[in-house]
Image (cartoon, rainbow, N blue to C red; front, side, top):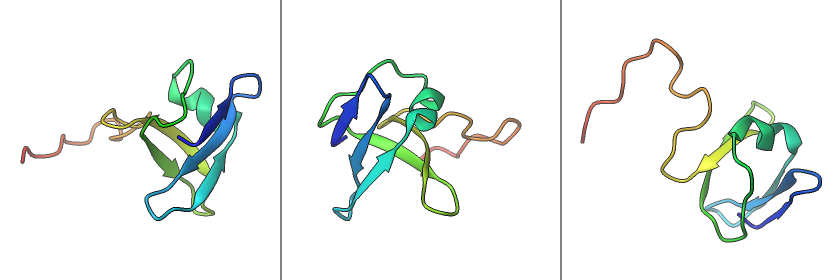
Length: 76
C-alpha cells in the first residue's frame, strides 16, 4: 500500500514491478476493509483494462474469489 485517503476511500498501491496503480472507492468498498495503512501488503484484482476492482490484505482471499461452487485449491 502506497497511500490511502479515508475521506475519499481511494488510494494507490506499489506493484511488485515498481509501478504505482490507483484504486477508487468502489474497489475499497468491495474489500470489506475499514482502513488501510501505508506499507501494508495487499493483493489486488484488476479488470481487463487494468483498473483495480478489489483488494484484500495479503494472505486473505479477494472478495468473491474463489468463485462460489469452485473446488478449493489442493494443499501444497
